Amino acid sequence: MPLLTVERVHFALGTRVLLDHVGLTVESGERIALIGRNGMGKSTFMKILAGITRADEGDVRLESGARIAYLQQDPQMDSTASVYATVAEALGGIEQILTAYHACIDKLSAGDDSVMDEMSRLQQQIEAQDGWLVAQRIDEVITRLDLDPNASVKSLSGGAKRRVLLAQALVQEPDVLLLDEPTNHLDIASIEWLEGLIRDFPGAVIFITHDRSFLQNLANRILELDRGQLSSWPGDYQNYLRRVEEREHAEHIQNAEFDKFLAEEEVWIRQGVKARRT
Image (cartoon, rainbow, N blue to C red; front, side, top):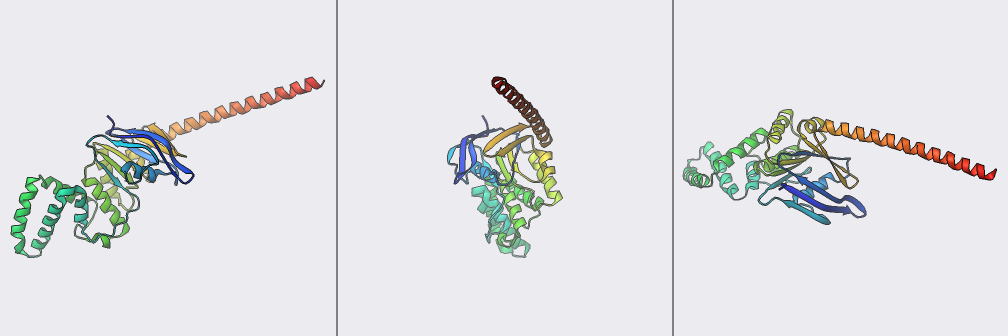
């Protein structure tokens, strides 16, 4: 069964149709690049897949028990919470315990020994929920994205806030990962780390990017959105370009042959008219 199924999804802004009853199935192991000209509705489609925007018609279904995470293109984050707390927030119930434990570590580092009993209690709760692996995952993602876990999210630049949202998406270990321009504001080392993570990701990834190197390195399927229609192309981006060129060449030949046919028909009609006049 596909991880994600889209059936006859339709979405319009006024009279402008962005998605015209489109369909899609997504399987584990697919790394799908969603491409198309600006303004065609790529980000809108991603929001519909994520459940943020409701389609006018149609259905989007996740496999039973599957999880989806979404990194949007333009985050709005004004929280006064720390980076660590904000990233851990994506994990639900264990988030408060891990955040409290992280705060105790900071106090202990500052010389406050009064938190020892509280730390012991929190450690027991973390062990009971197998939370150390979760804590390790949070620490690794925050470190690799070059974030200060103690910084207030509100104080961060737009680029750093975006990295916080990326960290939120990654720590959830979703089955379907939706990424809208994930390389924005990342340095080369972070991009290479992200490429490795996506390449080894066991679920499915759908991403939008203007980074051609990132696109070529990762995509094993191209999904083109053009004037409300989705076209699927297996293989990487270079294969897509080659297939499109072949299609356009075939269409050019077909159009030339049709033009020749029309010209011959016009000559035949004129000859017939001339014959009737004589």
